Length: 425
Image 1: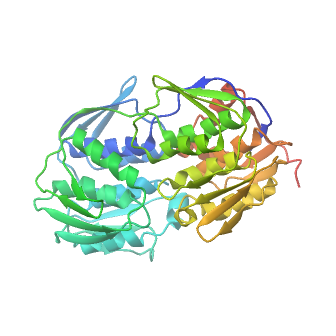
Image 2: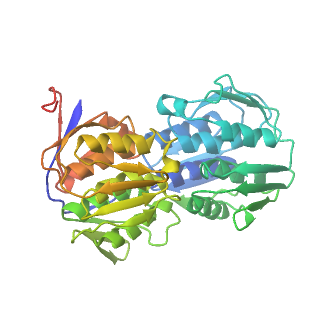
Image 3: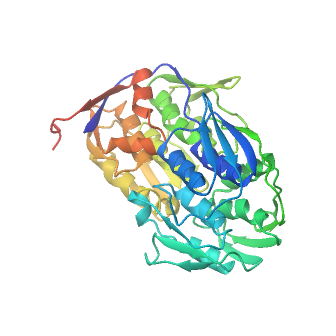
């Protein structure tokens, strides 16, 4: 099955899904807190389901309520195997947490995660004394055992913040204090998100300019009630849709969010879109759109919607941070270049910059490459295309935003699913 997107005008109000990044962190923290925690406004997506399955396998009881999850945690167990699905965050975050128990546990996944290298996870855990067996030769699966033995490690932060998040969540549970030296940390806003959430669960983390983290041992997670805020990553393509083809209002948005993808507002302001806040409702409306320069090094998930935005701007847009795109659900730099070329947008990549020429998209047949953010970006691009855009493997949006196409249709997007052979050759 493919989905077809036709040129259409956007107008309406939506509530985007809650943050899957915060949801996975909250599930891990609730598992580490002995007692009963309540997670309000839980995220409903495949990555959240994978994290829920992991904490259940590690001994937590999870009960669904009307608009919340109840997590009852007692003494944790070391399962023989956990499966992270296709979630990079669950892989990198739960690996250090699983390693708290010296018993042997295998970590595996499915789909695109099996093609994502894990060298930085292996190196970081081994530096802290964990015994790692990697039959996948740099890829999943891995087996961890023997527990932490070292109180100091150097961590490579150039590939992102997710593994560091896992260490910051796990190491306070050790009896000993731990010091981490972190080099070239990327996605710093996500570390702020982690530290803030940990504080709500009773854990204190200190650092010196994000380069040295001092983690006190013998800290105790406290059970708590935690509310998951709306997801800026899922909101970004909807906001771009409003900016290029009408107007959209999103409810329950946090102006003071630590989420890195809140930076979509900076890009929208730079290109000339109209942005308005009324309480926690954010509205974006189309105006004359001009090319812009943007550094996405600390928010690489914004690349796909930014490409859709740039393709509708007058002039040539430059986005920095291409090196952050290689090890996502797809090699997003290459995939964006290939798939948008099919729609008439000749993207160039020069060292660490992506250059996107603006102009009318002609439409055509494209493929998500089983990458949820690529699928959403192609759909948004189709709203302003001369001819329809057909997207293969569009079902992958279930990873983060299962109702994306339904919601896009609610605000006027010309969305249709069909089975017959494409008209595009």
